[in-house]
Picture 1 (spheres, rainbow, N blue to C red):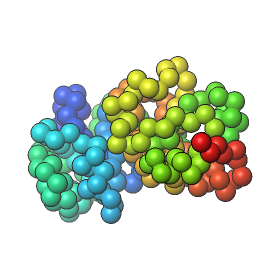
Picture 2 (cartoon, rainbow, N blue to C red):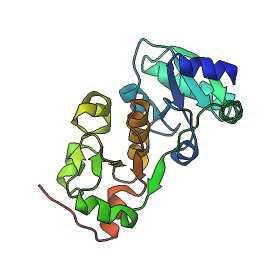
Picture 3 (cartoon, rainbow, N blue to C red):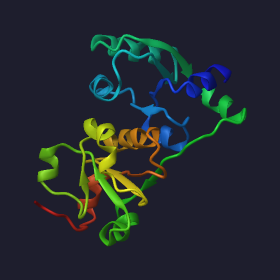
Picture 4 (cartoon, one colour):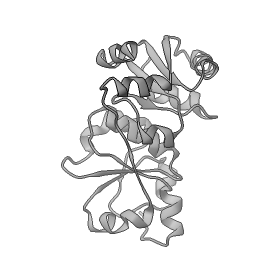
Length: 203
């Protein structure tokens, strides 16, 4: 727990490899969530800085080693260490802050979206956006999110949304790590919004 605390206080790059749901349920502030799946290397290469030490949070040493190998293939070869997921509980029990991501359904936030009470950030590709998007949404692809934080209006709750909820979960971790408070993840994404027959805009 003390080692993890030191890494977090130093604001080192920490990647949480757990699932989006596990990350949403509780994670260390400032950490990025890139689940260890098929697209892990793609998103690691997009979201992580080159030339800096990176620490991993993983369920097992095998998972951490696998992630390190995948990262090394794309030039992210500075994995400085890893922490088991249990270290988060130990750190929390020792007084460390735990951050959570609110998960929302399309029907649960529809009224807030259509009224403009919240800012919806759509992190999909340009092609996906062109096929339809939520009314009033702001289009910032996930790979550009960290560079375009200034485009997100302040003082409004932010809902992040993608096609099915995977990229938006990563986007939520990016926003939180940059100090955007109270980020909400639209868990079912655009697919759920469309299934619920909610308003869609075509440019």
